[in-house]
Each structure stands twice: as structure tokens, then as C-alpha cells.
Amino acid sequence: MLEQGADKLEMRIRELEQELEDLRINCKTQIEKSLSRYKRVIDFTSEGYLELDRYSNIISCNETFLKLIGRDREDVVDKPIEDLYVKDSVFVHFANRHHLNFEADFYMDGGGTIPLLCKRSMIRDQDDDPIGHFVFLTDLTEIKNTLDDLQQVQFRYRTMYKNAVQGMYQATLDGRLLRANPAFASTFGFETTSEMLNYPGGVEGFYKNVEDREALLAALRSRQLVRNYEVEMVRPDGKTVWAQISARLAEGTDGKTFIEGILIDNSEKRVAEEKLRKSRERFRYLANHDSLTDLFNTRYLYKSLDRLISKSEETAKPFSLVFLDMDNFKQIVDTHGHLNGSQALREVAATFRENLTEPAFGVAYGGDEFVLVLPGFGKEQALAHAQHIRACMKETTYLTSKGLEVHMSASFGIATYPYDAEDRESLLALADEAMFRIKSRGKDAVGITPG
Image 1: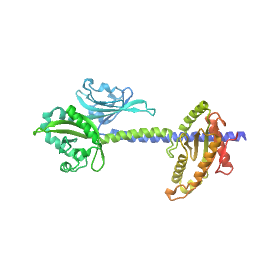
Image 2: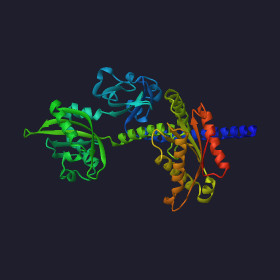
Image 3: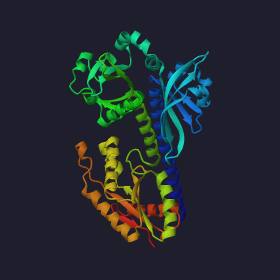
Image 4: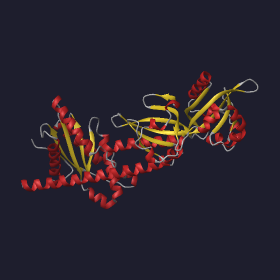
């Protein structure tokens, strides 16, 4: 008997190891797909992009950046970013712990330089430790030519105003638009400049937060000139526009002061940044969670059990594991299909979450097996709570959103640390054994480890 039990346990361990390997491969595939998708976004953005390690060495770059400076990838990758620009040309616009905005003249292949605005943001790992930076780079050539040489601006004013890719505008200090070029009108969803100039909300109506416009006005009054002021704006149709504004105070022939500025729509870049941020958050989430049920995965379970064992040794407080396996779940899949079977597991997982209060948590152990971890629960408490969850499952009708009425039950097994076992493997095995005893005796019940 003992040999047969050992063989079954060994077979079960091999099955679990295979399930873990399949889950790892699936997660890796999903991550690779996401990385590929967002790499395409970065490669085709209109701005240069760099990824730096924590020492500011370039790890990767997109084609736009290579075209801006006229260099090949091997001339850039693995080199410090500081080697690519004239250090004396650096002008810092904004800096804090996480972000740095500066402009500098970058060396071009064959001689010459190109002025680029660099917006650098810190990349942190799941422990919030800095591991590098990503940098978006914008060609400032036209902006610098426009703002640094006012006589040339006046000479080319009308043609550039009409045909410029960037939005250009003039407005009074109290927010009334005086002039706007087609690009500026298009950025805010207007078909013509005249339609925009007649918009009753004026400039102030385009700011999502009025305080942002007040801050821009204060900076203009203080310095007369503001470059690359980034602000969240909103179109009349409600669509968000992330704008980068360079503006100055000018004086008209009537002696009145007005604002003259250039606006660049940075919405696509912000969307790309947000996608990258969400992608990294999703990767961190999937490292500890099951993608089907959103419960924790076995990787998190094993780490948590080690921590709970150490804490239990310090506090002398027990904790319990509830190992459960769905009853007759194959019949549900055979009757209603795999998709409905997956949905049923999601809904069962929701039942667990509704009946677990932190620090207790649920784990998708594999297939239709789950583990519930109950810190601070002795065996009697765990038994009562498992009975409660079992009753909730039996009272719940599942798959109603699919037009079905499915009732499900499970077999439960309980083991408690330190009374039943003194290591995580033995504790899991004993809870599993208690569950299998219930399976063999008719299912739909809660069993405890003898002792």
C-alpha cells in the first residue's frame, strides 16, 4: 500500500511539475508577444527613443533616432548617451528624482549637430529600485530656428503659419485666441481656423485644469519665454490632448502684450509611454497571478508559505491550508464546452475571493485544483471556514451570464502548520491527501488531516 501511495504521489508531483512548466512557457509566450507589439509602437513613433541601463549606457534605440543623427545602430548601442552630444550645449528644463527634461546638440554622422529635446524617465523594477531609463527625443531644429531668430520668423511667418506641422497660435493674456494655424485647429478637432477662433471657450477652454494655464502665464510673466511646457488639454469632443507648448510674450503694434506660441501634439508618445507602463505592470502581475482566474499562482504560494512558516516560528501562531478539487468538473466541460468550463473556474475563483479576507488568499494550483491559505487559522477555524465556502459554492448558480444554470461542488482537504507538518511540501501533501480521501468517499465534503 505504501509503495502504491508513493507511486501515486510521485506521479502527481510529475504532473504538477509539467503543469508548472506549461504555465511558465505560456507566460513567456504572452510576454514575448506583448513586447513585440509594443516594440512596433516604439519603432514607428515619429520621435527618437532610447532605452538606457542604470549607468546611462544605451541598450536599444529605434530607427527614428538613428535617422535623426544619421548613424548606424552599432555606432550607438552599448555607448554612454553622454558621448553622443555636446556637453556644453545641455540646457535643463525640468529635473526631479524620476524625470529629466533637457535639450542638447547631438553629433551627426559626417559632422554637424542636431538639437534634440530629451525627455528621460526612470524605469524601476517590482521592488521600486531604479534599473535604467527610457528617453524620448524630439527634433528641436525648427522650434529653435523659429524662436531664436525672430527676424527670420517674421520673414517666413505667413507661409510657415499656414503649412507648419506644429500648431501655432497667438492669444491674449485673458485667453482670447487671435490667430491659429491649420495644424493647431486640427489638433483640437476643428476643421477650419475660423471655426476655432469663434469657439466661445477660448484658450482657457482647452486646458483640462485651469491651474495649468495659470502656471504657464506665471512662467511667461517671469521669464518672457517658456519652452517645452507639457500640459494635459482637452478637445471640445472630450478627447485628451497631451501638448508640448513653447511660447513667448510679444508686443503688438498697439502696444498690447500677447502670447505667441507653438504647440506639438505629444498624445501618441504619451499613449506609448502608458502602454509601456501598463505592460510592465502586467508582467509584474503575471509573475505572481494566474492569468485565467486572477488568483495567485504557485510561484507566489511557495514564497508565501516560506514566509508564513518563518513568521509562525516567531509568533507561535498556526496557519492552515485548504486543498480543494472541483467535483465532476470534466462533466461540466464535456457538457458545456471548454470556454464555459474556463468561465466556470473564473466564477468559482470569484466565490473564493468574496469569502477570503486578507491576509488570507486563494491560489490556482493547476487545472481545477485550488489552494486557500488561511494565516492565523487553527484546524477548527479552517474547518469552519472551508465549510462556509463549500456552502457558498452550493448556493451559487454559475454561468448565468451564458444563459446556463450550473451548480458545482468541491472536495476539500485541510492541513495545519505546525501541528500536521513542519515544511511546506509536507503540508501541501497532507492537505492533498485529506482531499483525496474525501474524493474516494463520495466527494462534496471537507476532510482534515488526522492527528
